[in-house]
Image 1: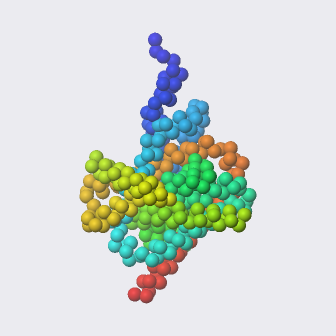
Image 2: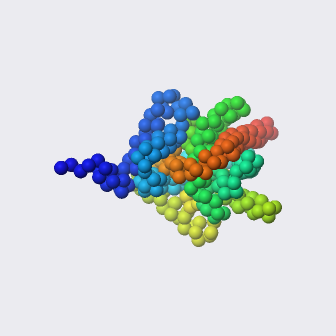
Image 3: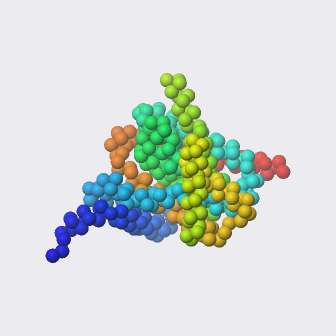
Length: 242
Length: 116
């Protein structure tokens, strides 16, 4: 006699195989749609994948923790992928050296703008303190942002969601902002995307060109470093002012 | 590929150890990236194997953010309660940051090109 469907389901839910495979399948389906639509920024594959997966998990009544048990193997690769950014970065070494000061100035301007505007706007519209703390490092790559927020008593898992959403917004809207401003230089386009929209912006920048991707990866790393220093300082100032 | 993947993991591991040992407020992989970057400069080149593996990983970088993003389902309560400040803040702040960064960098690059 074959076991009932629910029994197979219960068995599969307990192994990482199911949700790991599901994540890869859904992402590839999302990417297929994205490619079929001529890489239209509005059909961002990360956003599509998240929507599809949340709907699937809701329909099957699967808690996030069960899902993450399988998906964590994909999540883990963020670490080695961050290290791997050194390779495209090295390929741009010549251009990097020539643009050193513009890079430092743009980075500081971007990192401060990201922090101050995110907190300022959310505060003006009445967000709670916990949300303000969790939204501040939204432009920084997930592992850095979660680390900072955890240390300051925010909600790291909420931060992860806000960071990913920010990345999607940057990847979707960045092209229009940069085109409207008439920014043609791929290095500048990539650097702006990486500063504001971390790894998801970088993934998008790599679709424009390898140069844009390398500058975006550089910006993502540097913005993480700068924010890790600036943000705790900002929190201290705000708390001192009451 | 195996050798290259090991190199990436070793640099990440060294990065994590440096962060814990020196109590740096930065995640290990970022230090690992910086160390690998310095190594490549010192060696004066990238091995084909490492280049291939790194580019392979980065080609699917956006996939790696999906598991964290699905975490949105655990925060739907807070998000539905504070959706307005959160949405406006994320959209405006992100687009303004892109504009400010790009404009500052372009202005400085153009000024320097003119100066030369």
